[in-house]
Image (cartoon, rainbow, N blue to C red; front, side, top):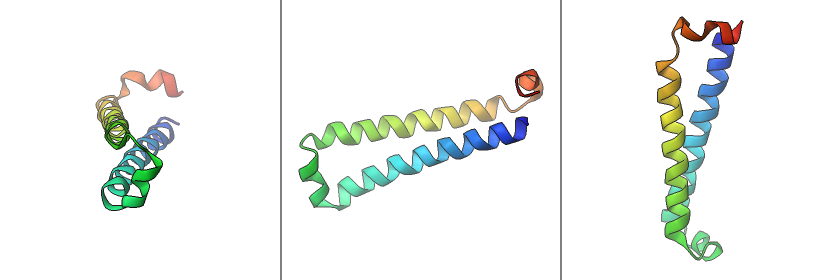
Length: 74
């Protein structure tokens, strides 16, 4: 059960990072996307915050992959 939970969380955070990367790349490479969001810098900043949050969660998850929290998954 623990491995399944960790795997599901890892996939979630990796997907959140990919989504943020897509948004950032789209804003930089697709000029028509800019017209939909007048405050482009704020939108890119928000995507960067989402990426950073997901990266931090991945790092925290990796740090907790030992048996200290086994009871949570039993």
